[in-house]
Length: 108
Length: 120
Image (cartoon, rainbow over all chains, first blue to last red; front, side):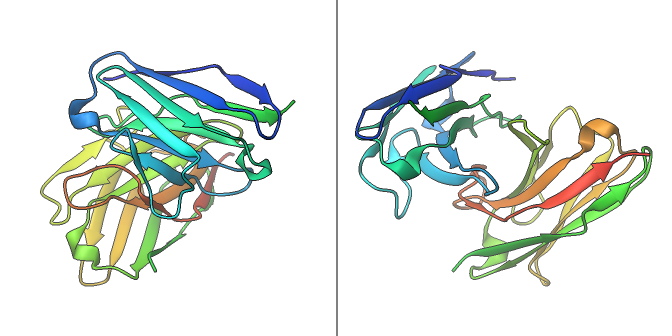
């Protein structure tokens, strides 16, 4: 089983600041099948990034993903008020298709 | 527009059974892998199970293996999760999700979920 870790647990930032999230895998993620999701309270998660670095349809270009193998990063270049949420990574290359524990971004 | 609408959740006693359904529309259901993902109250996301377009590939999380069964009816554009021997730790919102194609298991589209509560 590939275990995903995310850091930090919580990020306290102000609108306009840059946010960087890390996702580490215990084994290499095959074919970069790594996704990032955003979840706001009371809502279903939303796909942001797939294939480690491809933005999903309708996702603003302030969101970007990078990485390969065991180390992946999600970056929000300038935080907008609507970006304060919880962010999860998931590997979907080998079963079980595990999620990371999430990083919460809250307003400083 | 892709739509996934879950139903069948509710309150069930420990040891009981429940069958969740997911009605899919807005795409050719028979061409896509489908998944169930759950979220316990106040907790993170947990992948539960996945099924390929023709049901030839099926995967389960260890936490549900032997108790849950995923299935689909492509003629009815529907995905199912039969849940037996339910435990308190199965209490969660269960989301139906769709992958980007067959044999690719990411959750590109999500339903709003149905709440399952296991309690005596």
